[in-house]
Length: 96
Image 1: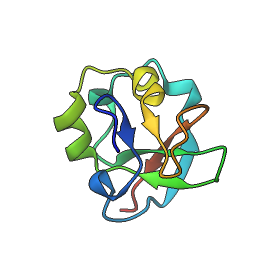
Image 2 (image 1 turned 90 degrees about the horizontal axis):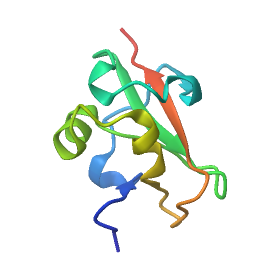
Image 3 (image 1 turned 90 degrees about the vertical axis):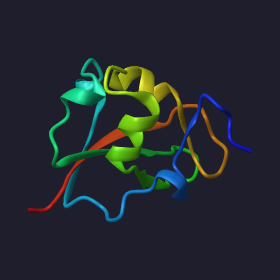
């Protein structure tokens, strides 16, 4: 069951394709979601099962808004295995 304040890394918000390059978002956590460029997408990695999930930015902006910081977004990540602790935010760059 999905928690109403959690962000699932499942298929309901999945990106249509994976990014060409990715980096850990730990040094960008102060940025709001609205400041990300059009060619950047966000996702998460689970330390328990090593799952990497990418999210569709249009759906993310609609559901949580553009003002939410990436730090607060990272705290809401939930993996498909059910893990809520220690999930890391990833920022990916789409291929041109």
